[in-house]
Length: 120
Image (cartoon, rainbow, N blue to C red; front, side, top):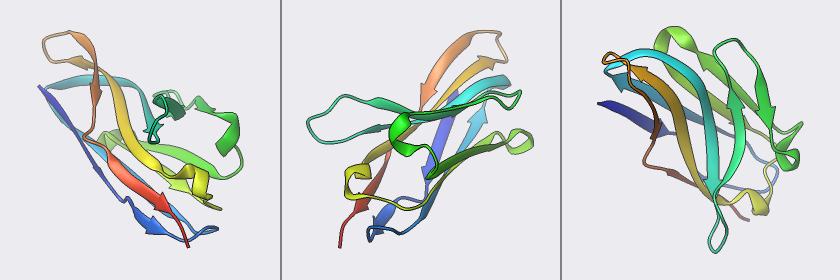
């Protein structure tokens, strides 16, 4: 089994910053893409940012220039640096990883979610 543990969410004022972290552990042979999704109340879960092992990144248009995704492949960890936060960034943020397990099974795993609230 593979576990993803997130940290770093919280309450922040508009214009502030937060850094989310997600560490993967368990029966990991290799990790391919890692990313962050978010889900606001009454809305569908959306992909916010992703990063491949090779360094390619993707950002949804609404966060370009404000959020930065990075990975520490040696630590199986992905980060999301969020700056210039807006109230519309308020959501539960979920970490996602596409993993080949030690049993050579390729599967997507999810973290438990961390709440980010942007409010004055």
